[in-house]
Amino acid sequence: MLALPPEFSAQMDNVEVIVRREPSAADLAAGEVDAGDDLFGLYTGIPLTERAAYGMALPDRILIFQGPHERAFAPSEMEVEVRRTVHHEVAHHFGLSDERLDALEHRRR
Image (cartoon, rainbow, N blue to C red; front, side):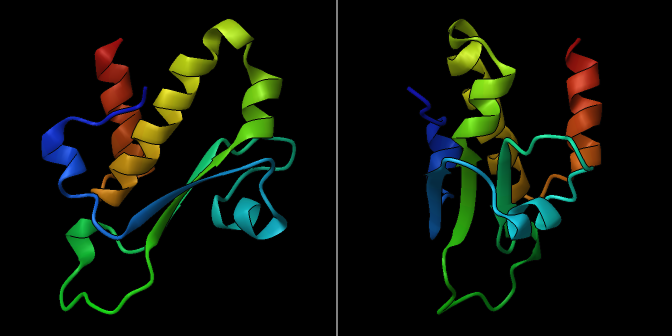
């Protein structure tokens, strides 16, 4: 179960979560992935911190890619790693950059 705490899920309006087998070339470019690296997830949309007159907009999207997870992680690790990817992409929806997420991850260690 990948449920978010209520204070976060209440703010997940107009966001769709999609699982795809593999990222497309456009997904890899948008994720700025280096050649040979895997892309586990991708957030596309307008983060909450950047929204002003937001209406009549297509949903933001959180894409989760199954193939890269299966290649990188053992079945016993899958739940934790997919949860980590979803939380990472949700954090982008809330306006956190990759740099900020990396800093927060280093502080947790």
